[in-house]
Length: 620
Image 1 (spheres, rainbow, N blue to C red):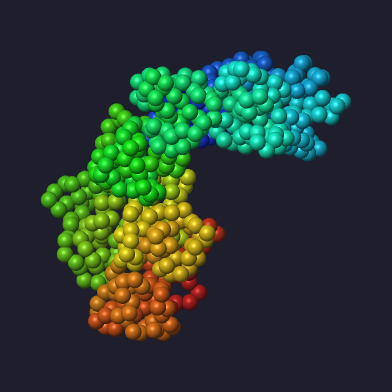
Image 2 (image 1 turned 135 degrees about the vertical axis):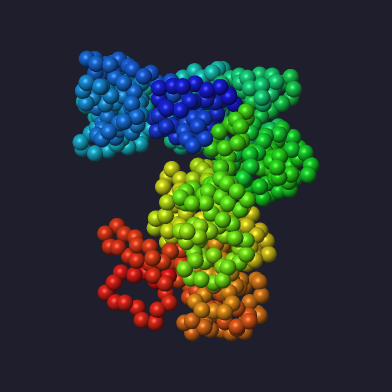
């Protein structure tokens, strides 16, 4: 992977060229295609890819559809459609500084001609159309419907996609120079014919095929063929040659069987195309430290840190220099949605975890949430006081060390004060940033209302500090094995509350055990009303048999044995989790907030025998 960078007009950050074989959607033309040369933004907070053609788009162009003025590349597309193709404008694009003429990026750098006199796909002249008022019609080449711009010959009543109009019925391709390839519908091929692309195993409606050699490639590989020779000295010291014949092989880097084979005959070295340009030093969302590529893992490693399955010592992998037993399969880095594609080799690791405070004395800090005064550390537990709640998590401060501003009655758990400014989560490759300006929001993980600190991403996801403090693997008293983050599987039930889970979970595969984020983030101990002792969370696997009661001391309804509850063995008190916490336990009393319809609510303590009527209150 290239470590040099270049400043190009299309993006405000430097871009680094990469030899990536598969990339996400291009941020320039907004098309996801297979490509072999591209650019990536090297700014840590900006994860964007660009086709080589899109990235190198010029700042100013002369365009045949607007000959009076030059057009300038801009990220401010505004409203309305592209003036050439009629499609919705998405930035970046080209616009005229003098007129209101605007084009999308593709129409700017690859304008569609108004007419094609001798098209390969038809015998008559074809005319460019922005759109058809009558509705969608099928393309004569690929037979898919046309919803946008097209080419047409009205007398024949034929229509073609802009991308299909220049397809040739027969081509010569550098990856199969022996015979020409013919455009054919894949469904018409015989059962023993190769119907998927030789290089990507994608089955498409139309392909190019050689009936003599049973060689098939997709339309994308005809427009952008894979390189015949790749020189990448960090991966291998000799040039690597594309071997286009389909054979079964094991990649010397990742140890997986696959396609897209590059080979060094001199060294008997074989490698997948997508393994050539893997990062040397990277950061993934499933581990706190950077991990580095090693061509031969060696002994001493446990299972893969992502899939938790066996990882071979004879092939390449990613390992962590800080955690001696942590390693990850290469395939999960490439396809597992855990890596943002950034190469970190040579980039200092000093900005990964910025503390949210500065130490100004022995037990004194200045925290970003309370810059007016310093906070002093109190290391002893304080008595239960319903008015003393942590500003970050909204829970009482009766357990553990806390930071206090006596002058302002400001309380902050020590663990909440140490929350990192930047945090990675298992379900997103974009890092999340800590926000300390209190507002009411709904956590996207557990669905609970909160007004403390939260983590937020570029996609406007909000995660409260309770869910944001959960780490992988999670060791929890509710289960004997560690739990790992999982995307939702078959709409399962949580083993803590036995409610249907409609979001991501923490899971143990061996036991088919799921835990929702709401249960996983429950406090182990909590003060309740005027109880003499704190209540302890009782998990089913933790010994619920010690409690012989079958009703809740608050609502006097049944306690289901399999569900978690809070209890005090000294006082023989047992309560539902919902009875202890309610719906608004993460809202600080005294706060007033406004919802979308303009209604204002005040949060008050739920300790009154008589509640006021005709007022908007939320009881904590």
